[in-house]
Amino acid sequence: MYKIIGADGREYGPIPAEVLRQWIAEGRANAQTKVLVEGTTEWKRLEELPEFSSRDPGGVATASTPGTITPLPSQAKTNSLAITGFILGIVSMTFALCCYGLPFNIAGMICSGIALTQIQRDPQRERGQGLAIAGLVLSILSLLFALAIMIFHVRFGSHDWMRHMRHL
Image (cartoon, rainbow, N blue to C red):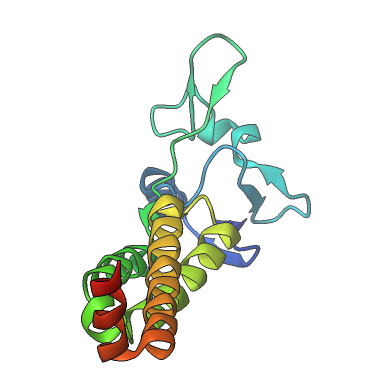
């Protein structure tokens, strides 16, 4: 039986070797994962345990050259709020003329900001930073565009604008 320290810093287990091998296959544990073997008091890296060495077919890592350990790749997923923020940014730009992009630009900024925070907090499991940044930029541009339109309407008004354009 084994206990491990997960990427989130929490302790999991006790679990049997079969479950630990499944977690390795799923990317939930890798060569650097800290493990406590039942009956011992010292935490070790998973790669240090003979039953999970690179020579073992169900082991943690593969050896590309003797003595070199290549950890299993993590299975990062695209953050759903990053996708949502990007889509809201596009929608806010689409509706910028008719309704100033509201409420899509505000929601896009919020979703993208939260997504960036989540991605920074857990980069091994979360990806989509580019989408979140693009959503944030589009939402901010939509808001700035809306402000420019509002200022233009206040300054010239709907009829004054037409007269101003005729005199040019």
